[in-house]
Length: 252
Image (cartoon, rainbow, N blue to C red):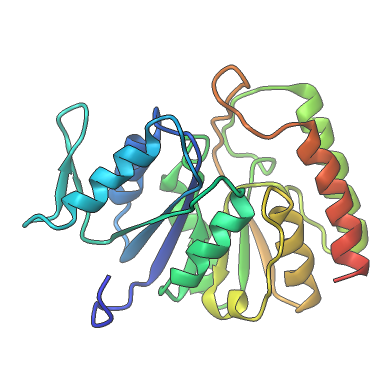
């Protein structure tokens, strides 16, 4: 985007890795949200055709008007879309760092590209920050919103890691590992992030707690995927998450 472009209210940062089957739809859904927003899409070295689709987005931005015809015949407006490409797959945390550096909005929101999280939740996520009572908002899958019932042991691991995180940070979250995290941009500017992969979730939580940020949770809807449907987080990420609980409490 040009330097003279108006500063948007909201920056939606979308890290993407091998989501060709969902990338068109998530961009459409985000654009349907009636907010003053910019979309910052960071491709993390995709190899399934996602990168090629996003390269077509970049080319279509030069058209007048800047729109792209999607595979179902619909059209996607691109005037508020920025696409960035990581040279290799480095992980969600690395992609988010790249996107955060480009974000211009007063509020920055993380959106996964896999359709598990519904952009229709944006209004509720932004409300505590807009009301002036929160610096950071987490969208919790466990506060009563509708959600698909999936994977018992995955939920156990989430509960254990969230409990350990709460013990270390002394804040009482119900869902540290949620995708939906929303920040005042000045908060992100005060935090130096290091984690390249899913450890980002705990790192940002610990560092926001250390800053004394006012952290709120709101219920969200959740449409989880199975591993057969493309879910990427594994037990290895759980082990890394445990290490990050300790690392970012005591050593960072």
